[in-house]
Image 1 (cartoon, rainbow, N blue to C red):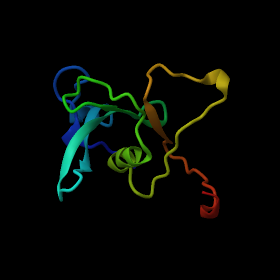
Image 2 (cartoon, one colour):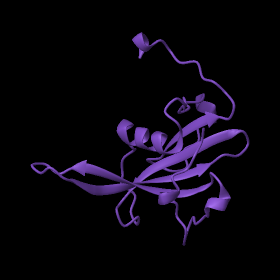
Image 3 (spheres, rainbow, N blue to C red):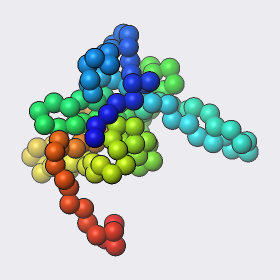
Length: 132
């Protein structure tokens, strides 16, 4: 089931939305990492997530931005960061996918952005765990 982390929703300025907009909006999720030599974590960036659930698809686009949200971090999100996003927007039992369409249908309008998709009402067959 698709849900949004309203505590991270952008409420003012560019990309602003309200909870009444449902699962559509911009969200900034803080990413923390352990500080070497210390038993604490510090925030080093934010995951900018743009969520929507139209035309039969649930979708979140993800990129990494600086803490002040003014600069794109010039790398794609890691597997762990995409798992953070998946866990915020979907239930643990939901299977979501990233598409690699045929080359003729590639769309790359924003460098360093990844996408997670889930077809509403669909079940995805996944490979045997031995193959993963």
